[in-house]
Image (cartoon, rainbow, N blue to C red):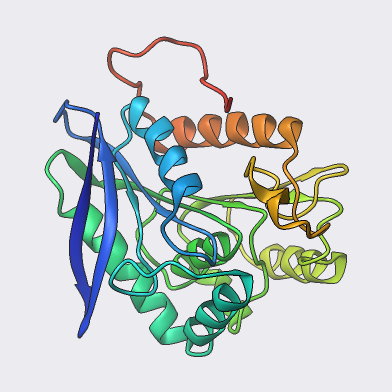
Length: 251
């Protein structure tokens, strides 16, 4: 297993993602992973390691430039709002990461997926709404509202939304609006709602800040990860080489 800093650009902005992959170079599918609003961090990299262990080269994308990580929740919100304020710029930043991944050795450009956590989930969806050539998109406790909801008609990928039923940051009205948005398209999409789960339910460190809106939920984490892997195998139509048949789950 290797983990390397991948330098790439979005126009004049220098980006520093983390590319995780195993030692094999058999051409196959790959994943761009958009982290939460704090930027490239331990949780996103740990998820990338689990995916790479299955044979999926995974790029943890840098959305802010120079590998910037938020100092605290307030700073994370500031960074996120600045990028979201211009949807074209937001989508271009996501596209730059997808393109950087697609140029890597052993990556099959026709079998790419995007997934994300929290703000990263919303970023994966915006990338899909832009019409990017993706086979699958997965959002974990992600932002569902879009500045241009009608662009959902451009989505080419299978879409999986993993949402906490008690998430106060993505309220029922936002979920309902997303369902209406998708219902007006021919997109292959599914929404999984996990009872009792709040925001950031996949992150074991989510409750460290003492904010009740954020908490880990082991059952939701395990079930959403398993559902994601099933979708990826379906979307990629690819048998993972030299891997055990069982589905690895989060710790």
